Amino acid sequence: MSYLVLARKYRPRNFAELVGQEHVVQALSNALTQQRLHHAYLFTGTRGVGKTTVSRILAKSLNCTGADGQGGITATPCGVCPACTDIDAGRFVDYTELDAASNRGVDEVQGLLEQAVYKPVQGRFKVFMIDEVHMLTNTAFNAMLKTLEEPPEYLKFVLATTDPQKVPVTVLSRCLQFNLRPMAPETVQEHLQRVLAAEQVSADAPALCLLARAARGSMRDALSLTDQAIAFGSGQLHEAAVRQMLGSVDRSVVFSLIEALAQGDGRAVVEQVDQLRAAGQSAATTLEDMAGVLQRMAVQQAVPTMAVDESDRDAVRTAQLAQRMPADETQLLYSLCIHGRAELGLAPDEYVGLTMVLLRLLPFKPGPAAGATAEKKTLKAAEPAAHAPAAASHAQAPVAASVAAARAPDGEQPPSPHAPTPTATAQAGPPVQALPVREPGRPAPEPRAASPAPFDAVVATPVRQAAQSPEPPARPIGIEPAPPTVVPGAEGDFWHALVQKLVAAEAVTALTRELALQAELVARTADCWTLRVESGSLAQSGARERLQAALAEAGHTVQLQVELGAVKDCPARRNALAATQRQKTAESVLMADPFVQEMMREFGAKIVPGSVKPL
Picture 1: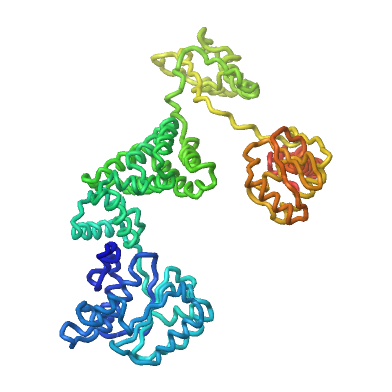
Picture 2: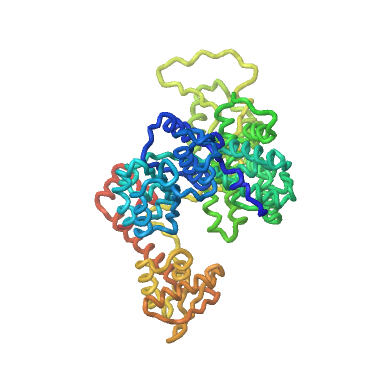
């Protein structure tokens, strides 16, 4: 006897065995019990959640005659009467299943509807089940509308689809629609435990958890993966073997990556990714598992009072990481992980993409605390930084001069020999406290009680922050960066005009467009053109072939040769040079405007750098 796969062997035979669709079971059971039956049902949902199974159970409920042959419509079909056994075996003459994926034309639908005029042969009702109904053509849908709206009293329609958006609204309005939901991993895991217990197969709980997560809400996928895992593990399910079969990443690696990111340790992140590459584990699965852990960390951070399941080792480790990583970094890293999965296909390889996705968090981490790198207070004035701009000393000099002028007339507090000179004060920064200036005509303030330490005895030096890369200063109006260098070549005008035409018509995109823009046409014959590029990534054969095909469509059927070398004239440089000239022209026009000059002269107005855009 041939082996029957688990997904078929343990297909539910009645509503009591159906898993994870309680809302559908309750509605259909009540309708069958009260005999408030609709003439058309539409079951929607992803693959493997029970659409066809519910249809068969519904057909058995409508046609069950009971073990004694005297039963009627019931929500609990007996499973032993001829109608139930024949429907399970797929040979019940009054139950017809039509696969709309392969029978999608109007002729097939008309052939099915021709049987509607005949009463049931064996059962109580005829049941027409159309699977993947969204694959039918518009003509086929229109052909069945009238019968679907007013079928004979002995006929029931059951439609199933994974994409209800493609079903016409005229069909939807004639059906009762039930949405079968994807099943939770916990529900799938519990069902797998019952199935494996019946099969007498030993299994670890972590292995079943991996299978339940890999099924992504589909019970059929879960049972199929379980069949594969049993074969892979020689009749046993262990976590290591299942993880190897699925290509899943060890959860300890995921936690190590998150912990390294929390500590800002880029070296550890790169080393972990190298280990994943050596083991051949999936980068997309790594990001998916990290997103799951980060989601639970975010819940722990948002609801700190939530109890942690001490028996779950992952939950304890997740709670520990939630305390180490700030909440804003958790949210940012979660966003990077879920969006980074879409970027893996654009990277040179998926591990390079994984490395860049993870390292992207490090530049956004705040720098070390100011107190950790602050210079201790001392009696000696701080030396000015060698790279400090001279404008700082000019801006601080009037402050020091005003303090010195306030002290000199009173004579109450002579300068201390340890006090910094005005020059040093101007360079080191403003003093900690400025003494009040006595206005003429007012009495001198009463002397205050002597403090434990004279004011001049303590001089605070400025706190020096950790060295950071300075932001580039905004470019003032009228000071332009050096324009791109273009040395016009013999074929420069022709190549530039041709590339601009291809780009405008969107005949070249992505890497092919960059090849056309960055390349210089150095030689041109009737049959062969030679391009020169500076980057080796642009000289790939795929991009060259696509550009060659685009040129052929534009009327230039030639062979392209791409060489590496210095480029002096390319469309990208010409476009950049033209853009620079337009920008300079726009700024010159704005600076020459009389109104702008008047505002700058009378009110000290300034043009915000970068705000001038050519039209």
